[in-house]
Image (cartoon, rainbow, N blue to C red; front, side):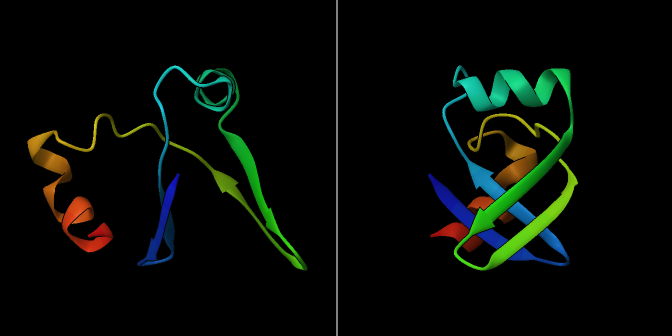
Length: 62
């Protein structure tokens, strides 16, 4: 899993058929927790990282 934060948004690259993606499709309200940090918000599936409209996000991940 790759995670990138920019412009007040987290971008997460994860397998499209994972349980987490299936859960997001049903309920977009999510939380990310790590150690003492917790973030809440809404998740949106923007599609495959190699889609043309995701080029800017992928460039930042590299």
